[in-house]
Image 1 (cartoon, rainbow, N blue to C red):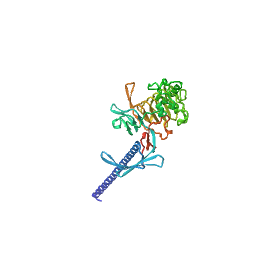
Image 2 (tube, helix red, strand yellow):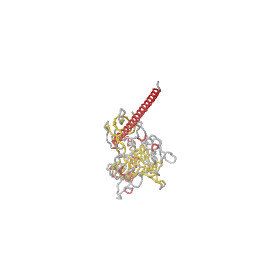
Image 3 (cartoon, one colour):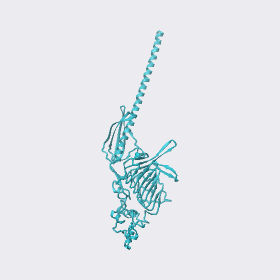
Length: 474
């Protein structure tokens, strides 16, 4: 072989190696590009699917908020997902009931450049749900959130309230758009004729005649001073009748006597309450009757202890429940606290299956901090103030809040009278059903306003806390 031929072989061999390496590099590069593109398309399809599922959940939640009914299956046809005006994918969604009772599933399929991903999640629901009005008042209602600046950050301490909200007067603000730091998830009805002051009189005629115990005997205002007192009794028999109706043991027969009699007389009788038992609140000396202002709390050292097994206690005075981020009466049961004066409760919290019901002839004061999962939204708390309802700072509760007077909710309070502190407040619809009389909390008077929804989402099954779903990808 000549020298030139040998060089030619070496050159051709080198070229062949170079070409082979180039082909390998191009093949690997193309494969990696395809793999990246496939991964990106799958990721885009996944997020499109999640967007579709969230869209369906929002629509179903809207059905719940407006007390409408769902006609299964619910579906969303192909809908484009756009970012900055460019279409990056699409989703199609179906929500339908499952073989499990009171469970529905959302199945959302996202598509991007021909790649599809489906995500699913399940929710429990009830098809008919009755509970107390989340927030109601006969007088004006004021809800105030705040936003403060901390160095370079803005911190918002707002109010989030479930609806419907009903008021016999004005609501400030009356919509989310009018109050940046107040958010309503349901309707707000001002000057509503559906709300009226809670009455504890046994009958309309009893109220008209001031016949508190409704026994057909009463004393009239004989001296014309606009009230019924002992001075109106003309003889010993009428004085006895006055004493029987003056159950509040003060100088005059009025609404307070009706309030006291409803609990210590009427409701205390076994045939008139769902427990079918003597509630132990008939008067001084009875098991669950407390004379004078009473402090309740978890320790029992500097405060009164609720007797074991009690479902209701009556306080002839003010009731104060100290800081109680715990199941403070230490029983797996509902508890109703009645007070002829004011009720003050700090950081309301109770067992996850329990209901705490506070009913005050005077005002109710509550306040605390929104501690997330530490001490919020455990069981249900229902509060009825025959006077005003006042809530400061934060906290998160399930249940009903109603006031015959004014409702004031503010996420700001002053520490030591001058130092402002803030905390967010969440007011949620109760989670238990009051569909029948036996299901209603013990002690709420007849006519307590309720709301009925035909479809309600209860919780995400097997998902995360705070109502956020954990998607199952397939």
